[in-house]
Image (cartoon, rainbow, N blue to C red; front, side, top):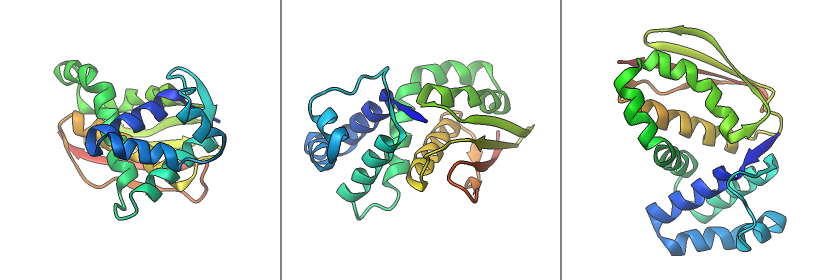
Length: 182
């Protein structure tokens, strides 16, 4: 399982936009090991693929850099996804129903992660049940990242929604049920 470089860049840019350059620098300085060296030397390429453990490491550093913010991962990821897709979703809102957009969003995971499989178990107006399987190496932090991105997507569709129902007994698999009103 690998994470695309755009995940790292988007997270760092989101931290800088919301908290400033000093916060970004503190976050990078707090990342240890090979990932920390790569971040400090600008060696993470947007289109490159990196170990999933690195993704968890930067999310852990994010939590440790902002310890008083329990939803920091979802917040920062949501901002990054909104920035990444803002132009696309202006067009999508004009031509697609929320059900169509959400059902077809399963392909988006491949933009961010190499590996795993997303299925739509149920799709009807007002409810979509996703199953994420074989996301080997995913941690609770990485799932927070994924859910933050999903919340941002549904927010960009400008539909009201209930809190996501996230279920899973293993880190590799999760069921996510999205209930919304168009």
